Amino acid sequence: MKLARRLGLPSLPGVLSPVKRLRALEFPFRAPSTPRGVDPVHEPRRTGTRYDTSWARRKPARVVRAAIIDGPMRLAVSALAAPDRRGDDRLLGLEGPAIFAANHHSHLDTPLMLTSIPEPWRHKIVVGAAADYFFRTRVVSTVSALAIGAIPIERTKVGRRSADLAADLLDEGWSLLLFPEGGRSPDGWGQPFRGGAAYLAQRCGVPVVPVHIEGTGRILRKGRSTPRPSTTSVTIGAPIRPTDTDNANRFAARIEAEVAMLADEASSDWYRARVRAHAGKTPSLTGPSIGSWRRSWALGDRSRVAKLRARTWPEL
Image 1 (cartoon, rainbow, N blue to C red):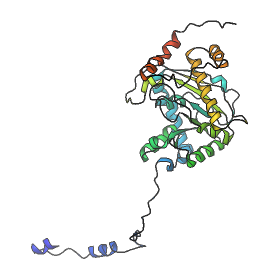
Image 2: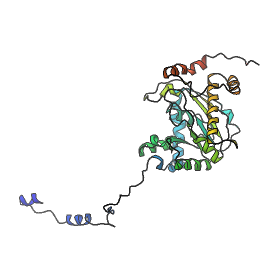
Image 3: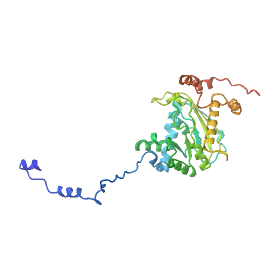
Image 4: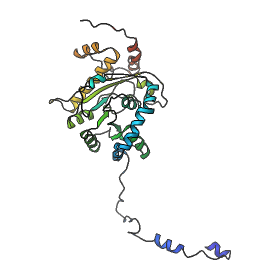
């Protein structure tokens, strides 16, 4: 307006004055201001454990997710991992929801499991995913919930919100895929199992299906961004339930022992794995307590050893 007066031009119309007056209005025409000395009220975050995943379990999202799992995800897993799947027959008598508990070496473990779990659990299953990683932003949260059916789980502590959500879904008939180690293996060996899967199984009265995954660490291990094709195996075990004498810690130890026995079975055969398990000599998932380079050497290439092993009759 000053420039207009200097140039001898007519001033701007007075239509702007009502806008200025409207901007000057206070509550309720504008958001209330916070008085001095009072902490402002912050809206709760919509990410992490507070992200609402209920929309991803409605029919439109389930149809899209089924198309993703049975289409591009299955093709990608077949091309990268060439999985050898065993143990589906051990689930023949299982009915209703279950918790699938597997060891964890790679981000490829989730797609591999989602394409390996048989019907009727495959298309009615949610994945317990780390809230601080898979739900760190709204975009990542949306993709995780839609593509893999992820729900946010606190892995650094026992969160009541996460536990209640998982328990409610189990009660509604949804199965749950969990990786009880809490994170990917840093060196190829397993990590001690935490008690989340055991606690939920006891709370909801559902069985736990132990699963061993081998080979995904060679394809996309922790710290690597580019996958390298290799071979994998998925060995599904028989469902187990907690006994009256089990608490969460003891049942978690039983789940870990079952997965260790499946690992022994994958690297040898069913009979010898059962003999070693009966004698209490099943190799540990966590590996020997020795130096890092010796642990790497002891790990070796178990898939190659499994392929080269000679098939022999059991010694009776």
